[in-house]
Length: 242
Image (tube, rainbow, N blue to C red):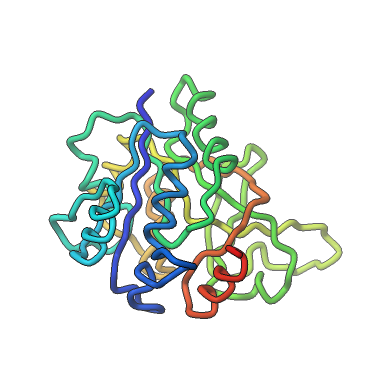
């Protein structure tokens, strides 16, 4: 089984433009993420795919592997799908460019899902973290996921799900981390299929998979790190890095 990691890297993020080129204790965020992913030693290859000359030059001049997107894309999955369409791979792991605290333990759990799935029942796998803080549960920037009894995703939402109609029920809430592992075929299906209403409404690309009947296996991790979406996140990341 050939497994590679692709890191989609868009320069003009809406909430924090240029965030991937911000300094994180001596190196840019995107370079930290690339180096952390390589350091796991889990992949046959690690490649940044970007629409930005600035990011392309940053990775290439530091000895990394990087590809330019040929087209404009709405989301990271589309960008990766274009890049891997003609590559000989079985599983593609998408590490977000703003995840400099990417760790070996979490990624190895994702890869194990496919190694333990000889009948190809899983189309993709992704990570989740248990959350208990009510502010985080109600924060629309925190994407929640609900599961069936076999840890397959039922739905993702920016809203608190499940809704606590009966607060005496001991419900666990999970935050979805934007790290995915795809079978190549599922990723290419995503690329070719149009966006439907749930994805358009919530602005969550993972809903496209569910709307077209793909099966997403969720894997719990205790490693959260910091996803850098805002300048405040960057300051938290700097303190954590020290």
